Image 1 (cartoon, one colour):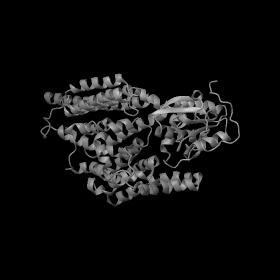
Image 2 (cartoon, rainbow, N blue to C red):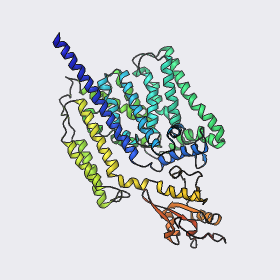
Image 3 (cartoon, one colour):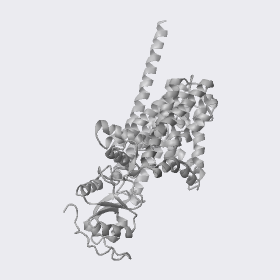
Length: 557
């Protein structure tokens, strides 16, 4: 009896230690993504655009209607913008809160994923591998620190799926699922159903217990609730935004885009080569490669992965981040495989618990960075890459190369941590010089000073994406020019005291005296902020009229 109690106590301690060890690993993985998000600036064009939309809504007190450059913005629903403004209401307007939204959404997504794994019938020790596998994936890790819609959408989708997995679909579960579905629709619109549709249509294939008549009614209720939440925003927003905005919102952003996408700008197979990169480091570790489903609980992940992937592949308009909601399904498959290998007596448990390919890939990345620093390709040169970071990456690969692991769970955790440390080294020390070229705060501050002096400022180039509005806390949208010399000439004629913001490659040939330009490193080139009166159009066929330009001066004079 005493021996039995001792064994039971030892097993309890072992489970306690395993549970907390896994929790620490997941927390460290998440913390590294959080540090990466806070350590870099908001990136143009996407991140600066979204935070600027929230800023314009905030400044104009336009809670219901997203705004960009003073006009209604129909490209995205408002959930992300509302979340940004909610944080500003609590903490004041700042740049750090928007950077926290995706990491927090990633944390919520991992919690939902663990619940899904448990409800599919996996034990807790195995279910904890799912969020670990997800957080370690290269693309999920990177986007967990990006102010984008994809991680937020994935978190809401997982929240909508979790109540549907097991047991009776009662009213409470239906309401929870419907609320999360509504948030998903408010995050990215009807595109949600590309992922959710195949899952709902195949419920009899993967659900252990049939829904029944009442369950189907509750499922319909969840769908109606989600759609009602979307319409509760969309209908008033369409009325406030006017006819053109309503057409873009209800038709242009769905039907028109789908029709234009059928031009097959990218081939059907375009996503397939990216899958290996999406799932790094797991793609380089054969023990975790998924196998075809043999049991009912494995079917959901395969349907979740294959069905939406096929639909996304048939739509010509392709972006790699569209696949983000599919990565939780891949994490479930990896978890299932790792759990199978970790079971004593199953084939494959005697495989060596180490990985050579992952540290080799990390070292190769560091060596490639050193080569690019020596020879340079495009924007990847010694000016944008740090040799210290590249050497640190190679050193970490050498340390990682020597690691051995005692069991499958430990191997998965250490592999995930090793890969994420490599990503942190690559995105921070190694790429640190490049981030300064994507920081728009310096030119934005100059534009704010111009705005305070009442000087009109124009952006020279097509499709200005509100890049500087939030960084400069600008209260008025920039005047937008189409990038032609004729439009610049007209701006000089009508607003001779105005200033122009544009790429150096577009403005350099028009400058009488380049010393009047405030130059800033910007992405792959240089950004100039210059008085329009310092530009000369003598060599242009279009005359600027007889009006004399204002005296030319730099702002610091």
